[in-house]
Length: 449
Image 1: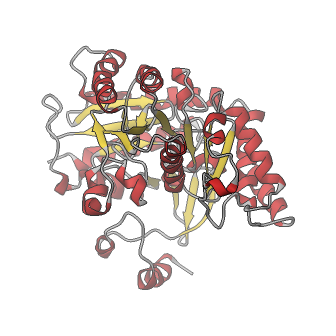
Image 2: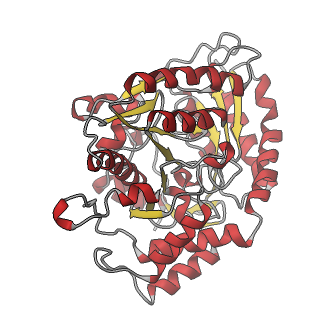
Image 3: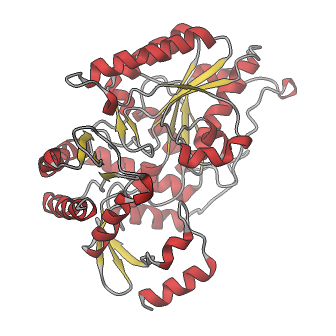
């Protein structure tokens, strides 16, 4: 088997995600044969440094021996069983562990099998909670501009990235959108904290005006990832928790991308010292091994559904692979690595190394901003650094960086004209230097005209 043979077979039958398939007439697919640590290897023997953790899911490297062992052991015992009316050890142990490590008060765990499904569950639970309490007017959701929460219809509706959402507008429920605290838009000399506080005024006014009809506010804590790795200060979450309590509105924290150490704490909400009413987890939950998601919620929410069957208050939501034993065991092994090693401390050292390596981008004539939250670092490409005039999206400057990086053995997948690094936590400082060096030359090439 070689690259060319597998690509030909692929294009005959596969439709790839988040892709214009016609691009692959000029942009060859990369068939991956194996992975080890931060490295992927294709069928022709070329290696690629996985600088984006394979869509943000891989925490501890490809083929991690600890997670491998856990999944293999589980496979010999139980691969899966219906979770309706049944249970199993891995599902119980993982729920116990998630209750232990998430912010206080999140005492109940509901499983699904991907991030979008977790969002759907949180939206439905919130709406259904108010309905069970007789408050049937509370049907609306408040979301931030430039937010992203997934591709299923409910998740897409509460997102706000036009590229993904606009086409499906006629299919989506109406939501209330509020200006983002995205600190890229702050005034010169204004701190992240001050700008985030200033932008919160929009949220406060919205909740004051619509509290009687709002079920929940949904946010990506600290980093709006798919919207271009836009970042804000934890104070916004502190103020939001207070306002949600004041106006009797749920707070849904979408920690699918930012959870499990990406922001320098285990969960981003910790930096604001808050507990949401719902926390959605996926991606890094299983270390990048298997599809699994979880929604953590409170005893208060749970009790609103706990009743005699004939009263029809039950949450009758299900997925065939809910609580899959293999996924749960991979997740337990992943959490075990956090608890047996100083992962967060090491991440802080790696984040500092990323910051040092990327320092030179700050003076680049086509870089408007270098921003960082923990193990996420983003570089905003623009036509003019002083005016922040953006490149026309049709020019696809980021794609040029992607192509160059592949030629040099680094997997970068820019978000439009935002180049970012979100590597596995097992990356070394030398590999960080390589990753950043390749990105530097790719940006030089992409912006030279």
